[in-house]
Length: 317
Image (cartoon, rainbow, N blue to C red; front, top):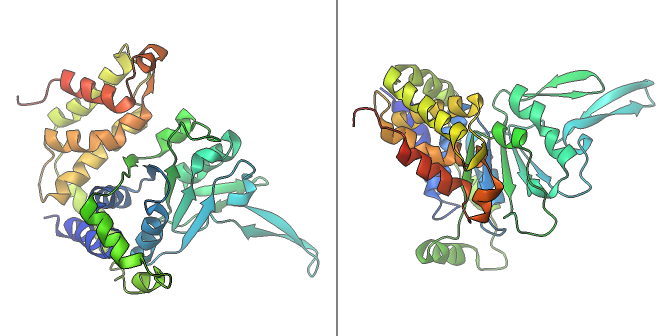
């Protein structure tokens, strides 16, 4: 049974749905990342509620929320923290940066320079930061939600491939449909309208629910044939003439783990090919580095990924 896993997803949909309208797919992706101990990259234009979504997400988890604004002059120590001299005891003391939180929003990450972007690598992978040859542990449930503006926006830097690979999922947050946008306007059109009251009404997730959900994943069977399917998809990305850099082993692992979580969310006892195909756009596309020829043809990573998925034989078909 995967009742706790489904319960977490349902709880997130209910609580975040009170504040953010028309973003059910994004909330589902956040549930997958939370259970899978991964990080999320949100792509989309400004003004769609990505900051509010992240803040509400942290509130539902009952965790601490911190926000980092990506700018060209942002330094690595602005995120990690620094040692400050205390004149009282004549010692240097470490002052924690905003990375020391449960949910960290890195807003407009691609406006920060490559050196600053790379400073996140250790934190995202090892859940610790190193400052002045000293390591400091981060929260056990540390989760990064980074937002990225469309690449054609002025003043943006492309994320390094190693940085992109640290994000378990990449989700596009698009403009809401008319019905959802109407709800936004009705809820927040007055000058005194505030999100704070909505955040205070969110119900916090039970403390042991997350651990139980992760334990439930052991009951979801991933057959050797499905594991082979994931490996075949990874191999297809690496041998494609349209791809310079295919899916890494870390990416293949994320694909298998997320497929198992999605199977649990639908109440399944085992993973099916449709589970793999459902999470592939979130897990695979952002990790593909296309060839110049593919870019000239106007292809994007999602187009190439869909073509590759169609070319890989599906088990049992």
